[in-house]
Length: 205
Ligand SMILES: CC(C)(COP(=O)(O)OP(=O)(O)OC[C@H]1O[C@@H](n2cnc3c(N)ncnc32)[C@H](O)[C@@H]1OP(=O)(O)O)[C@@H](O)C(=O)NCCC(=O)NCCS
Image (cartoon, rainbow, N blue to C red; front, side, top):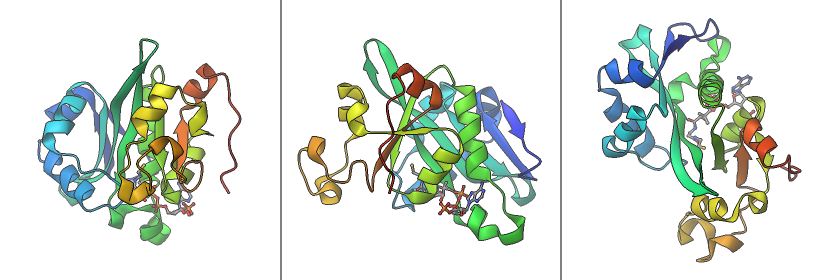
C-alpha cells in the first residue's frame, strides 16, 4: 500500500508490496534510528525483513529529501492466546527533525498518520503495545487506542510483553514490576478492547 495525506506534504507511506518494491536502503535507516533511541529496541534487517514480507511494516519517507526514512511503525508477532495471535505495535518512531514539536508552524502529524494507517490496515488483528514515553502514549490515545491495566491482559500476553531488563524494572519478577500502570502503560486497539469486554481504563495520572 502507498498512501499520502495533505496534512503531511511530501511524505509518502509505504507498506506491503509497495514497501518491498522500494529501495532496500530503508532497512539500514530504520536500524540506525532505532539504535539511537532510548525508547526503542534496536531492529536489524534480519528482524525487519520477515515482518515487511508479512505486510506488518509501514515506513514514512520524505520525497523532498531524497526519500529519506522519517518514520516507521511495525506490528510484531507477540504470542498466541487461545489460538489467536496477538501483535505488539512497536518500532514506532519519527526522526527528531520531523517530529511534530520540532517543526513549528510546519508541524506534520506523521506519528498520528503512521498509527492510524497501521490500525486501519490491521483492524481485524489483536493489537497491543506498552510505552513509558508520554509523547507516544498521547499519540495512541489521540488515535483511538484504549489504555488498559496490564492485569486485564490475558496472562500469556502480559508475560510476553513484560520483558524489560532488571536494570530498568528493579525486579527479576516482571509480574511485580512497579512501573506498570504508571509510568509504563499498556494500550490496545479499540477493536481489541471491545473483544476484551471493554475493561475500565486505569488512571493515567
Ligand atoms: C513517539 C513519537 C513517534 C511521536 O512523534 P510525533 O508524532 O512527531 O510527536 P512529538 O514527539 O513531536 O510529540 C511531542 C508534542 O508535540 C505535540 N503533538 C504531536 N503530535 C501532535 C498532533 N498530531 N496534534 C497536536 N499536537 C501534537 C504534542 O504537544 C506533543 O506533546 P505531548 O505528548 O505532551 O502531547 C516520537 O516522539 C519518537 O520517535 N520518539 C522516540 C521513539 C519512541 O519513544 N517511540 C515510541 C515507543 S512505543
